[in-house]
Image (cartoon, rainbow, N blue to C red):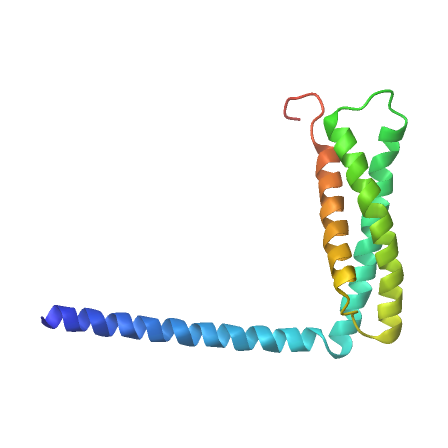
Length: 140
C-alpha cells in the first residue's frame, strides 16, 4: 500500500513538473516571437528574407542552365526543371513583396503570401535535390 502511495505522489510530481516546463516553454516562445516581430530584429529578418529569395533564384537559374541545352533529360532533370519553373516566378514575386514589406517595416499578414512562401521554398528545395540526384541510377 505504501509503495502505491509513493508511486502516485511521484507521478503527480512528474505531471506537475511537466506542466510547469510546458508553461515556461510557451512563455519563452511567446517572448521570442514578440522580440522577432519588433524593432531591429524585424528589420534584419526582412533583409534576410530578401537575401534568401534572391539566393534561391540565383541557384535555380544556375542549376537549370545545363538542362536547357541537354539533348535529352532523365526524370530527375525534368523534376528539377519543373520545380524551378514553379519556384523562380514565385520567388521573384516574393522579392517584390519583400521590398514592400521592408518599406512598410512589417511582414504582410496575407495568407496568399504565406502560401506562396511555402510553395516557392519547397519547390526550390525539390529542384535543388532533383538537380543533384544521380542521373545514372547509382550513387555518386
